[in-house]
Image 1 (spheres, rainbow, N blue to C red):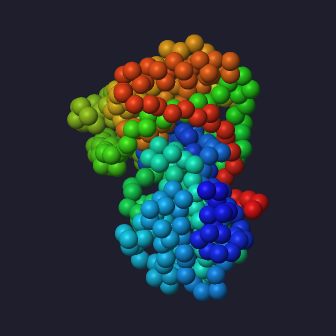
Image 2 (cartoon, protein in one colour; image 1 turned 90 degrees about the horizontal axis):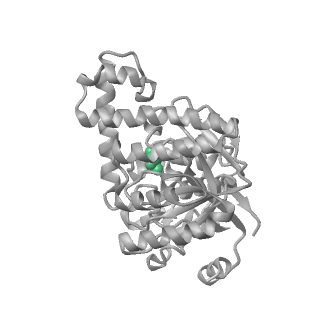
Amino acid sequence: MEMKNCFEKIFNHAPQMSFFSPGRINLIGEHIDYNGGLVFPCAITIGTYALISKRDDSKVYAYSMNFEELGTIEFDLSNLDYDKHHNWCNYIKGVAKFLHEENNSINTGFNVVINGNIPNGSGLSSSASLELLCIEIFKALNNLEISSVDAAKLGKKVENQYIGVNSGIMDQFAISLGKKDNALLLNCETLDFEYFPLSLPQHKIVIMNTNKRRELADSKYNERRAECESALEKLQTKLEVKNLCEVKLTDLEAHKELLTDIEFIRARHVISENVRVKDASECFSNNDLEQFGKLLNASHKSLCEDYEVTGIELDTLVNSAQQEEGVIGARMTGAGFGGCSLAIVQNESVDRFIENVSKKYLDIIGYEASFHIAEVGDGPKQIEL
Ligand code: GLA
């Protein structure tokens, strides 16, 4: 059903406002944000939509077209404690709670219908997209002034402290600061950032979804974080560094004996990946797409062999992609363990690329991958009804 019809059917009146918040892809710089280095993501034009009408009380009635079986969920802005029965609405509540704690007046209740076109569990940040969408809604309803950087920090706080997922800042930052046709080079330690125009007239960025459910993703993600923290602590006994990305590869090699074998390879991924991001941004400045592609391939190899977050589904997609004609480079994107990968493909090769990779994936994995051409878009905004 069309979103407006859905809203009218549920609430018996027309919506008054409409909002959009994007998803994100990360071009390069994976498992770097919580290690204080550089990442290179961009917002995409698929994301999450909301239709809203204001209420006279402080209640929220929320319906998601992605979770129709849950029906309309109701809560009051005067009680913002986490409640598992409120399911996805805890994202709205978390945003409201922290806005309230920062002395913002957020008393205006509302009716909302949400609809997202980011495939569930695909690693394109549907949750960060929803967090930033909620912030945009509260801003508009309560005339709040919140900068995009503060909105990103708030989204991360909701994810970490309210929802309980220990992620870094990359997703919220990439979404909140999203800019059409630009990638964002972000220093996750200082939050300094720079836009890089993504002009690829001869190529497409193809998102390839493994369609694998990311079941163990959260526990494995936390395990990787712990391994990095432990490696850093041990290296800090010999080196003056604030985070793992400050360590030089030669210093890591020189102090190998401090670390377990696992800690060593995890750290080697992080440090080498951070160098690759720097190199990748230079490739962009020099228009050297060929070299950029090689860095993407090297990133995937490191995530597969050293960080061990790929798995047969992502590896099958990426290895098949890298063998196709007209492909500049390919790698997984996001946390890994399923989810999506991306490839940069020459315009005229895209159809054959999808056909061939699709066939190989089905043969080896036994179910279909899905493909989507990424368009790089803006951050969260109110849109025309
Ligand atoms: C997930 C997290 C991010 C980041 C990536 C890996 O998307 O939410 O903070 O750590 O994984 O780069």
